[in-house]
Length: 317
Image (cartoon, rainbow, N blue to C red; front, top):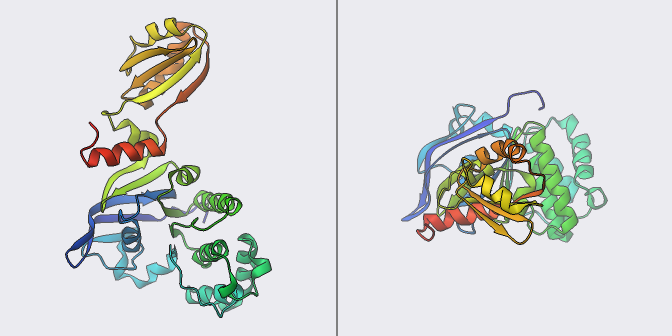
């Protein structure tokens, strides 16, 4: 997988409705390579969009393409896709080993490769001790690990993981997050659906934000944050001479406002955070200031999500 071009997935004004209910509006996006977080509140349309992008349901309008080919028109493309659903209906009478072997064969793994591949997956997802237990006795966390294992059984180059951390204990979550990041570093295109923002921040800074069936934003969190001028980015700097630094910074480009807080803190508001950060080292040298700490207060995913969804409803201005 490493060294090969990543799979590129494109949606061209894709929409889906059920009767008179529109689940997804005109959705266009393009992703390829690494981990991409698909974010939205419960009911925003994440699962429907996931199923559309994975080719599991037919769009009511528009098309989904994988490396330029219409996904629903080329059955062979589905062997390049792995899917981990949010819900499950695992056959309780099968063991974990039997289930993975069955899914691996269905996904096209050669018969002679099934046994070693299943053993590898059981070890990788720490299920070896439970391999011969029936699935009916698996905990929620174990079932989640098993679904992740079957999604990668056939070594796909594009993965859809729908709320993959649900039901996992804290240690299992950390291990799953590390595994997902590793899959992205291997050159795969990994789409992860979640409504838990801190978990997504640990996996990636590249996001697609969906709200009420529409894509509100797509790209790097910092770049998206820079495109919300209604909410200037707030940066706190700690130094020995805050008033001097504040008087200097207020005259610089990309600075919308400056305040002093306490005896050693300057708070800057900027509508162009990326440009501000690029210019800041030179500005500090010019000012002769030694800054002990720089901390951005609201460029995190939670703030970006809140600003965009509030603005889309006409709440924030």
